[in-house]
Length: 159
Image 1 (cartoon, helix red, strand yellow):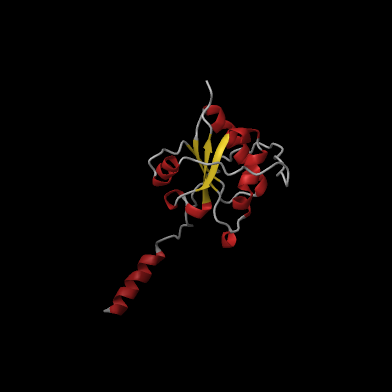
Image 2: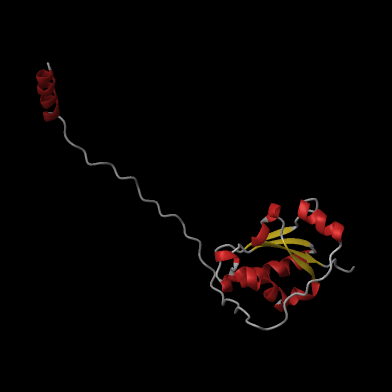
C-alpha cells in the first residue's frame, strides 16, 4: 500500500507549482531622535562630599521600614559616569524645586561592591547647587535596594 501512496503523491505534485515564501513587509520602527547636548563634565575632586548629618532615629526607622513614602526615585544602573552625573544633577534640581524630601537613588553595587557610581555619589551630591538642601544621605534598607541604593533626605523648604 505504501507504494500506491507514493504514486498518488507524485501525481499530485506534478500539478502544483511551488510558491516562493511570502515575505512580510519590513516596517521601519520610527527612531527617536537623540537630543544632542554637551554632556556635563564629571567633576573630580572638586567640592566636599555631603557630610553625615544626624537624622532623628524614629524618622530613619520609619523610612527604612517603608512607612515614609519615597517621593522620587532615580536609577543609575547601566549609565556611564558622565550620564549618571548629568541624570543626578537634573534629578536633584527637579526634586528640590518641587519640594520633594525623601529621595531614593539606585546606583547598583558595582563589581565586588566597589562600584564607581556608588562610591562617587556623596562627592557628586556635594558638588551640586542643591548640596545646601541635602539634610542626610543614608544607605537604603534591603526593602529599597540595600547596598546598591541610597536615601537622600532634603531639608524642608522655608515658606
